Length: 304
Image 1 (cartoon, rainbow, N blue to C red):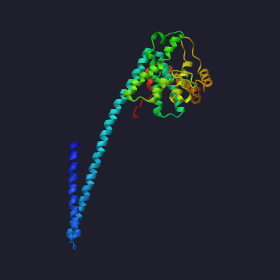
Image 2: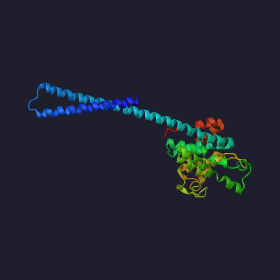
Image 3: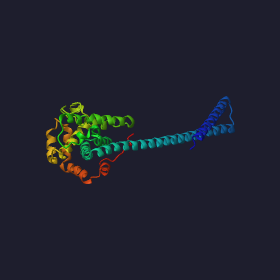
Image 4: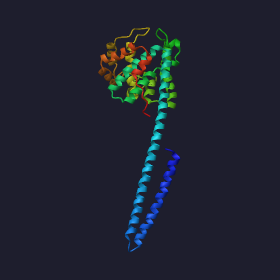
């Protein structure tokens, strides 16, 4: 529909309708001025008023169609912009995860497994689908700050010295700074940002970087801390072998209320050993990080 033509038609209909209303009002007033009214005169007035009503219906119908068309066009345009924004959003996040993967391949495998555990815990705790998606992206990006850690420290095969460990402990803040740069333009979810910054905080306040305690720590970060620890315990390191899933679960349960949120630990225990092992083996068996990424999180950013 041509916008100029539509506006012209609406103006024309409105003018005609106004003329008919004024004419009808004049004739109707004449009726009250006469003591005797002929049948033809009465019929003429009735026809005029009927015409006025028809014109009013036509004008309203035309206006309704025009407004609906305008709304549909604007919604389609808005959806198109959202789709472009979503693709940019997704592409930016994937680029960051690829960058970290190329820097330290083990970091990606760790992140993929942790995402699987965290989503399972979040589902048990009743998080919405939108929150689960943001929880997953927080998982993929939680170690993005390690891009700023020197290779000599990040890739060191032996145990870290105290000063080297202090450098590693700064990665949540560095990662948070990176995520905030994205958030400034793409409206990054607070859930994702919280995970990046607070995933090493402990429930008893002895974690880092800020020493937050209990429910001062955002729920998403508390959930993620449990998932992160589970994978760290069950993964081999150059300086020690990983423990079994059973041993890791027992250790986490013993630390509920101290290092870990008790409600998150409770959800982990409810998932069960069999399902946790399935999540672990899913990453190990597939190997290709591209397919792992697509399988563990179906992207959907139509929340805008």
